[in-house]
Amino acid sequence: MKIVVCVKHVPDATADRTFTEDGTTDRASVDSLLSELDEYAVEQALRIAESGPDVEICYLTVGPDDAKDALRKALAMGGDSAVHVADEDIEGSDVFATSLVLAEAIQRHGFDLVLCGMASTDGGAGVVPALLAERLGVPAVTHIEELTVEDGTVTGRRESDSATVRVQGTLPAVVSVTDRSGDARYPSFKGIMAAKKKPLESLGLAGLGIDAGQVGRTAARTTVDTTTRRPPRTKGELVSDEGTGGIGLAAFLTAKKFA
Amino acid sequence: MAEILVLVDHLDGTVRKPTLELLTLARRLGEPSAVFIGPGADTAAETLGRYGAHKVYVVDAPEVGEFLVTPAVDALTQIAASTAPAAILLPSSPDGKETAARVALRLRSGLITDAVDVTADANGRPVTEQSVFAATYQVTAHVTRGTPVITVKPNATAPEPAPVTPELEKWDVVFGPASAAVRVLSRTPRERGDRPELAEADIVVSGGRGVNGAENFAVVERVADALGAAVGASRAAVDAGWYPHSHQVGQTGTQVSPQLYLAAGISGAIQHRAGMQTSKTIVAVNKDADAPIFELADYGVVGDLFQVLPQLVEEIERRRS
Figure 1 (cartoon, rainbow over the protein chains, first blue to last red):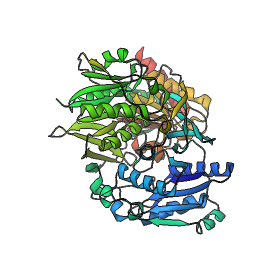
Figure 2 (figure 1 turned 30 degrees about the horizontal axis):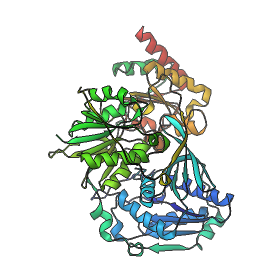
Figure 3 (figure 1 turned 90 degrees about the horizontal axis):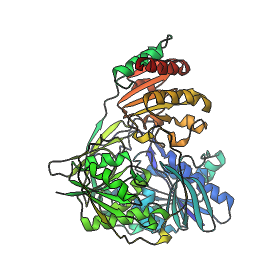
Figure 4 (figure 1 turned 180 degrees about the horizontal axis):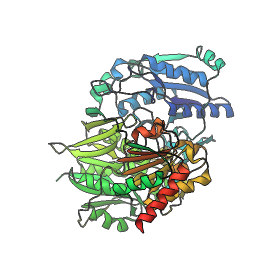
């Protein structure tokens, strides 16, 4: 079984993230890393590989040169190979262009299962897995908290806001898993050393048969008009409970007409 | 007047509050038409009309209950292709966002997700506002290609009635192949208590690590009930198994934007702040005076939540009687 895990190299979510002048995410001013939510997809791929024979895992990312770091991190956790798609023309791509590039790279590699995190920790729309399924013409088994892959099917549990739903799709399929699907492992020292020797292929748009006009800023279907830093919330009154903290809080809530 | 399609979020015909917000926003852009998928349209029509839906397009077929997301994608794409709306609004739930993205891809249109406001520009086109990077930035944007497809978060606006008598129109949709669909094997509705739903609530009372045990969440629940609020929990409390995941507030849980957010025993990690930072008023109770949550709080009490919260409930009840 061929598994392709899509990963993203994102600005550290705990750092002070900003925008560049043209309204795209500033990737230069803060350190980037493998998106935390993608680690859960890597983990699920590794568990599938451990539980059955003949599983091959390839990681795929689209992004500038340093996005390779995300692939190396994933390879250090386990798996076999990685593909890095980088091209100046990709810069400024929206979810449609990103999903196009990913889908072409997935087709080129071949797949039985595409695994993704539930969303990136920067853009965070969480729609790329669904768009990949749409483009590849396969089931989108998304937001899975408990994943089983067997006998050519993918079965999973999904929590919607009103119900617990058990769903099933046939392979080939695209699956996205949540941060509750199972804790991701840490790379071992041995894993980090082994990752350096694993094959990492670099590709441009030409290698995927995609025209520059189909991606990047020129193809984007939305425009950002303004980005404004929210004024930091002003710290309000802070009182120490000296035995009447609850009464003071009730007075505040009553004054604000909440109680 | 331009037609605006609104995808209805409902439970067997009971329309959920975010849909009423979408209809209210849609009226800023044109004349709303509701797209109702599944059984119960007759029950829903009156509510949809009260909030300004001139038309209700009804799609009811067995496929809707059998498969995940794709029946709605097929329906909405086919209705949009034939009605040529000026915009399509959907709720920002996981299903709503996936539906929106796939519809936009099929229509070759632009997509904006998680809008917290939608207004019309001078030409009547939608302009959206989004809150990004753990709610540290406000971004305004617009769609430049095709029919704008926009998903909107709950509590983006207050629902305002604008009663009309809607015209119901039944649609026969051609559904895509089952091989590319995801079958629903079972659906277990979550037990709904008397408290409001987390994402929609005007007031949310949340507990975190400081609650220190599942049995202690009753203290948080009593405050919630005194205020008519929904109960939330931090990731730490959920991971510890003290409260169900469906109540998790944060980046990977539910993102809330209520009028009042009360955080008890929550330190305020960035992952939690991302899910509640846009709340109008924030109140915190924590033992640690240096907890980051206090930086956001309009009012903070440094103290033991097991002292402060029961006293708060008592005082609210005393003031009421």
